[in-house]
Image 1 (cartoon, each protein chain N blue to C red):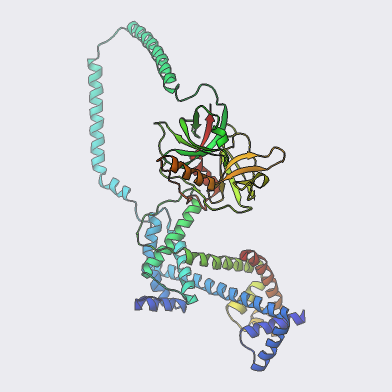
Image 2 (image 1 turned 45 degrees about the vertical axis):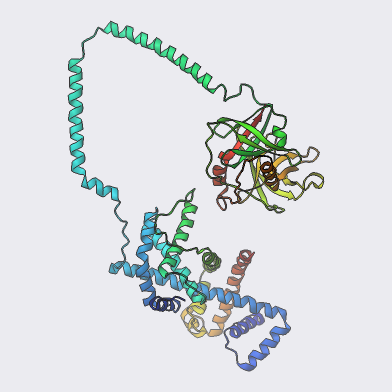
Length: 364
Length: 189
């Protein structure tokens, strides 16, 4: 220990340049020949720098506090919360308020007096009969109302549950969704349901069975376009081991799950899909796979039955490919954003912003 | 550094730990920042914290000698505080609010990122020092921060001679370095 202590002292004197020329040369030779000594010098230099920085900042912070207190005592800075404007207005108009209130009071009293004075005295039994009649009218009106309501909702809400269910998500706020091709390929008609339980009619505009991507368009006048989507679609490939999460509808309620990217290719080396480790159930198909920044990196498509915990997801570049072929076929333009606005915020908040754009897809 | 000769002198003073310069900077800019914080759901104490943190950023920046000011000093301080306050608000609240205030601010994310690393190291050292206990903390404080000689320290702390004080200092130093580097290495990764 004695030697260690002397060595550290020498290092300190060397770093502080308190050594004589001769001693310094000797020390530098030692340092060059012994890597342990060299390491100690480097480490201690870093430590002394941190110590110096620590001391300087500590000193500066206490100076700042002193200055703050000095300036407050001399009144050169004021640390008073400015009076809120509303209070000043109330003060100013106190009289007007009082006057207005009393006028309103007097008028109300006068009117109610006049009404009682001029109302004809009626027979109590008449009133009872009237009440009954009103009740019958009320009941029949309620029935009519109910009937009208059921009529109103009838075309929007299909009577039977769908043949297949899946998940879809908006890629353009105007009403374009992406889901899995296998969810809608055999469908006669497609309805989507949002987290609030509202049904919308949708039409399939593009299907690619190879990449398992389908694009739907919401065709319902009640759908209100979303001006700004919280997430973006990632064009580049995702990295191995990236933390991922998904939202989907394995039941009628939206369900969250998380996992990681386990391989850059899918089943038997399929290059259009990723292998991911996440718990997925029937109904999760078509759900977006987000990375931790809230960028869509894939679309969940299926799982391997023969192995446990192996799930496949179509890669997000397939969405871009689908849009390209859609552009050639028709004149529709779909604008996709690549930036996510939920980057760097807490997961619960990310989900709150994202979930409104995730839909339950039902095909009939 | 900056084109304005008065501001230049003030910043140079700040780097030298000159109290008068620091006071002038404080007096001239605090009001503006306090107004910003108070208008955006902050208290007087928040204003003080944010402003002082910004002063530390500025201090470390000028001390490093590589400070290039591309705008008015006022705008720079305002931008730093704006960023710091936005960060605190996001930690406190669920959504990112729009700040009400002046529109003239510049991007300072790079400056703050560098500061954040230093800040973490600073807090590590503070934690390590605090976990040392007495008399180690005062002993190291006296030697490394107040730059007292071993002889002085021996007499203040009641050691019979400077050698005893040195042995004690060595023991304390080894402990501090161990605590500090154990966590500093995690920081680097």
